[in-house]
Image (cartoon, rainbow, N blue to C red):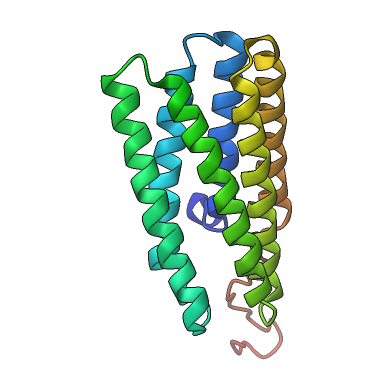
Length: 193
């Protein structure tokens, strides 16, 4: 089995799902110490998602409003992500503010994704991915709000773990079918088709 072909179909949703699984496990194991790690990892995801939006997603359709919204989403993602990364590394007392900031960011991202899905009517596959990402962003924002209340942090970790596993399974089950060119030799005539 070719390892390159095994992993070539994986989308960014697979990696976001993997990240959510790691975050969910970390929250369940050590809820108090993992808040900064959650902020750091979600900030890293926001930066990568912002770059992806500006480079790849923006070019899906030529509608200028769609492209400007993806540029805005990308710049907002990068700024919020870098803010979360650097503040979580250098400051201990800003954890609550960063969780609120990331929750607001994910709610805004949800709205932008819903708008983008409306523009992607001609591409049902991209539209499905965009709606899926909007739902996940909304759930992550709600979970971040739940993290602020320590009594339900274990529930938040479990929900993130389940969502991450769902995203991974969904991405693997919905991977595109890749047809590989094969060489067939006709045993009777000896010709290659």
